[in-house]
Length: 54
Image (cartoon, rainbow, N blue to C red; front, side, top):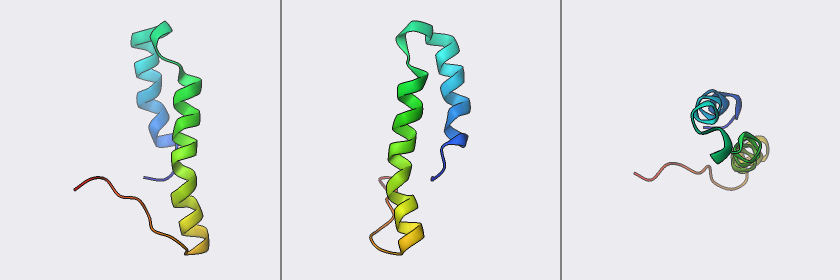
């Protein structure tokens, strides 16, 4: 699912529950990095979109 803002809500809840054991900054950056590949495919039409494991 491209586009990170939908992922940050659950990340904020997890951060509130785990506090020191969860980095919201690392979580946010990992979501952005994972969204770069499908964004590239959508913009250029080259490559394949990644899908979940069936």
